[in-house]
Image (cartoon, rainbow, N blue to C red):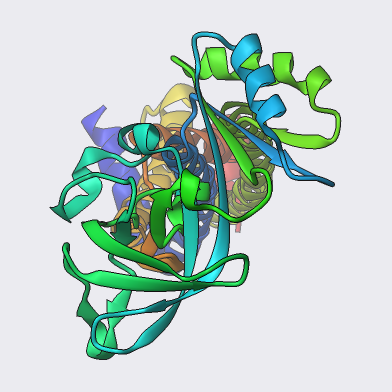
Amino acid sequence: MPDVARLAWLAVRERAGRSALAALGVFIAFLALATALSIGETFKGVVEEAFQRLGLNTVWILPRFRPLTEADVATVSALLPTAVVIPMTGEGAKARLPDGSERDVMIYYVPPEAVDVLIPRDALKSGVMSVGGSLALVSTRVKMAGDVPLESGMPVTLERSTGPPLEVTAAGVVDLSGIAGPLGGGDVFVDRALSAVEGYALIYVITDSPQTAEKAAARLTPYFPDATILSPQVLARQVGQFAAIAQMGLGVLAGVSALITAMWLYDTMTISILQRTKEIGIMRAVGFKRRHILAVILAESLIVIAMGIAAALPVLFLISQISIPIGFGTALKLKITPAAVLASAAVVLAANMLGALAPAYRASRLNIVDALRYE
């Protein structure tokens, strides 16, 4: 066996140019396949994270043609007695800040008792988590001139189009950058009783689990034909199925490159064997058996494949360190998993070894006399 490995390595070195080209093909095929599989995994991870932030245990009821009413809220509460039902509405306004500057803001009118459920406690940066009367929660996005942050206890005047101005005090300042969905778009949260907007723009339902949320959405649908009912859990599953199909498609496309590389290696080994016909005849004459010839040729192929994969690994690592900004203060990085690397290596190895098998078999079946006479 050591002789087989040594002879295979010497053959690769003697034909360094052709071996390097074959290794380059393996490099490209492995890199393409591993990247394709990793893109699928990355996309699935991003989708899962996004829907986790939306709240997989929630259901959103959004009106289409008319605002939602107290009767709608009562219907939801009756259908889902164990869920937390939070009616909300909102409107755009002009906020006049303590330094005299003005900012366009989005006001959310929420029930005071639901604030602790809607906004995570760790989002509070200063002050207290309280809404009621003239107390409001203000997002860290609302800043005075020169990007000076607003602080708890500061007064804010909200000029609305639906009613008189609201004079509120920032009870607390919250960072909503990590919150997706309808809540992430709010700038100022005030008591629902202060709203001059007719009806509700959203009924936000919180259940005890993602599975319960999916069942809740199905139960609510017949009762709200004129509303849109969204369940992040259902959307996550549908998008996950799409991601799996997309990943499979990318894998198939990248797998084609592995087949092309296998044909390339087949051609390389065929030419190499033709050039070494007399050498193979001499090996047979001095005692090498057919299986030894087969092993030497396959070992050459294995060395070339290993060189291509080994060269691609550091490049794959470098690609995984590249961050692609996708907005909202986040960046996308390719997620390279061991499973993707091993699967890619296995496919490339199998395809190329199969490509090398036919020339290797023909080399092992060469007639000794004919091989020695070959010019």
